[in-house]
Length: 212
Length: 178
Image 1 (cartoon, each protein chain N blue to C red):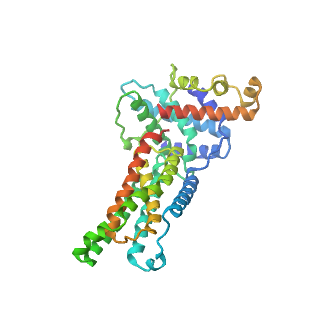
Image 2: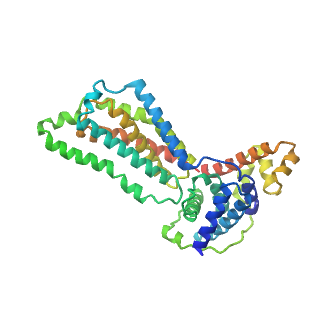
Image 3: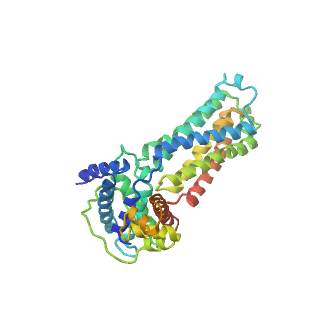
């Protein structure tokens, strides 16, 4: 087939429509949030003392970390799924969430006597944390990988990894409402591991499924 | 030159997405020439037929045109897809190529004409279900309109459009999967 002939076929198909990628990403984010919410409520749900906990800095700080992670990953993944879009700025913003956690960890180390560091870090929920963040995040991750297929990422493995971070940030936001361990020492350790699991799955998914 | 290409191509693609078929044909012809120039400059030691990469790029541009933001420049988008497809072509053929991103901004392309040989796209076309294959062939190789194709096979124009769209999407997907 000559290129001229191919152009005739493409031109004849000009009227076929697809939703603009930008709108599709917002729709996907909403669907992912709904799925995460449903899984969260059907499994663990929020902690009973959530109204009281909301008055503590440590509890609220968890949401700052996870929402910042999700928001920055969302900006980056939209750029990564668009060919030729500049990603530098969005990539640089990915440092925000880890940086906030780092600051909180340092403050915690000053606020808490050294003898308590160990118990704060180990907490009481680490196995639940490591199990439920990936569990809540796996549905959203599937949606985001599907979105990457709908888009056109020129770096599929990187885009898949960011899809995992986005799913992780979203899942951890819900999980944080359940968890009793509010210390930044706990969050920095176990949340990170759980989110890294999703990032790893995302990278694998990017490698295997995101072809175009 | 590049600035003029940019303004003209983004205008054409915007019009095409708005439903102007003539603008789309114009856009595809100009883009094919630009991509051909780019690809030929990048393929120095053979092994990859530039025209195969041109065709794969055009298909990808077509099935991924919803990823272009209408307020963003179109040339970086086109070249990013072309580069991706070029690297893909080399990867498939077990070769490696280094492409510097900076060079792309400076790429000027005079219209270049295609060379004719056995094409990857023919193999992809042969892999389609018979109904899709005959519709895609009728519209492309035989150059029939949607209406003529519908009359030839005794099916509705809608059915022709559906088969054409699915056929093209399947060919594009096959290139991605290989």
